[in-house]
Length: 89
Image 1 (cartoon, rainbow, N blue to C red):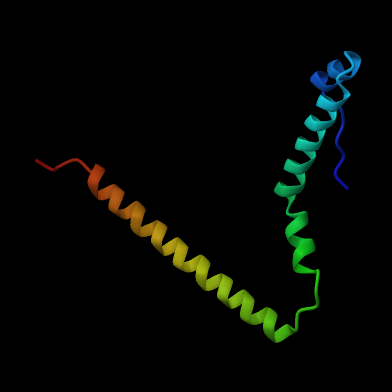
Image 2 (tube, one colour):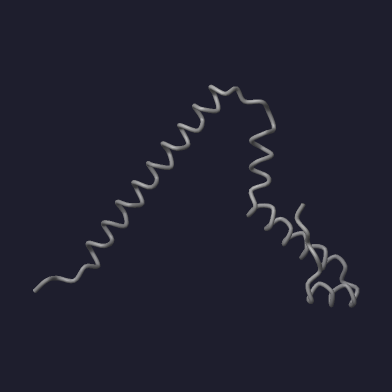
């Protein structure tokens, strides 16, 4: 599991009696760590049983969407390169 410890600012808050502020700071850091590690996404994927054929279809759909997005980004970047390219005069 993710290990969240006090940092210097939170220790100072605890010493000054601002326990609520220290807790909120730690909770924010914990949520950021959980979201970046992908734990919640994994839990949601395994929440219900998914038949193998449905899992394959979902992965194919996700892959196609990812390729479409990459294609759009490539076209956008290519168009931007043309606009910024200096004239060869």
